[in-house]
Image (cartoon, one colour):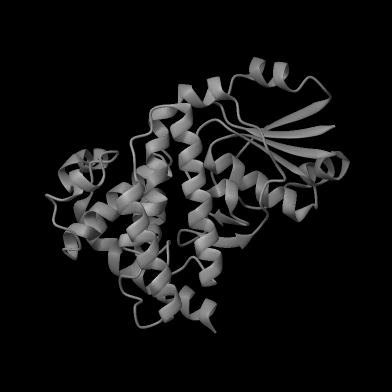
Length: 284
């Protein structure tokens, strides 16, 4: 029997056609608070866990599969984060997020027609790589020279390799880039200070304030653009030439219509405190 985690955006009839065997289908909760007693029993009885959805669904299934030592198949409906290649899950708790050890999916099933339906969303996956520009803000004194070097390597890679995602081939290329980025972070010893920094911590707080109305990449686009303006990291005139796939100037950010700039200014210092605490703990 299979346990299938999914979201409301995936048609039930597609799941029934794709997985005709005995199965239990569960929707992924917005906030992970541990498995219920019923879910614990279900996990004990199933032979495999399958995740059909985007980053949040796959991340959740990774954690459950890891806790119960079950094989995991990931069926991404879009490529929007690097979660397919990491062995951690970002769990939404309390202050924003806690990185919990999970597992990399054992199998990956790609459905071209499903991916092409969401091809525009895939461009937001570049945010996990663009974040290298802001990852070391406020923690430069805490991270190693090796991590700083890896961060510079990732920045140069993104500057030269980012493209607009429009075809299935582009998506495979994007997946290759995300896998390379995760490998680079693993070589450095930790993602903190290499790829995930202040922009990620701010985005999780922002997500808590505004809810799950936007994708992870959209929140990152807002926080990265804000920080690039705030710290004058890149000349705004250069962004469109470097990154044809993303409008990196603040005035083009979709979330800007909500007038969130004051909110970002307010949460920036709290996010930096949490980031520094976590980096100190990791670097011990």
